[in-house]
Each structure stands twice: as structure tokens, then as C-alpha cells.
Image (cartoon, rainbow, N blue to C red; front, side, top):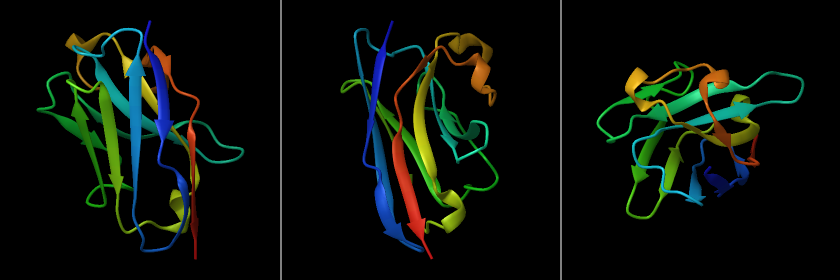
Length: 126
């Protein structure tokens, strides 16, 4: 099992940027799909972005496309989410997640991910 710990959240004004990081321990997450999800109060987990096992493929939610960039560094066991031009609608608790079944390709459904971090809060003020 992999333990995931997110960091980098905070309070930022609309139009600002934040960079989230997710550090893995326990086992390396090589050969895993890594994803970012978010959850606003009273809502379900929403897919944000994911990156495949070798970093060659990425998928983004339409709401963040062109503003967010996901990347991974398997040597450091980290996955990052660079968030630019943040909007108040991006306010949520952001989670890092791991899908061990990398051969299936990127899946946007939260239920397909096996390991989750505790989340880091992102708040965007208008």
C-alpha cells in the first residue's frame, strides 16, 4: 500500500496560482496512474486531472483545462498540480489518489482509485 500526503494548499486571490504536491511513501508509485480530485462542501469528489504511469498521457477536467498542469517525478515519488488563474469555483479540498491498474488507462471515476491522501485545502477569494 502507498501512503499519500498532499501539501501546498492555501488561500489565494482570484487570478493567483498555487502548486500542490503529493508525496508517496511505503511503496513507490511507479506503474500507477496518479490523479487529483477535489471536493467542495456538500458535493462529491470531482475529477480534476490524472497522469498515466509513464507521464506521457494526461487528462483534465474541462473546467481546469488550460489552467492546471499535472506532472510526476517518479525518482522523488511525487506528483504535482500547478494551478494558475485560479477562480473562486476552484475552492475545495484537493486529494491525491493512486490507481494501481495502470494498464486500463486513465479513469475519471473516483471509485477506480485505490489509495488516497487526506487532502489539502484550496480557497480562492474573489
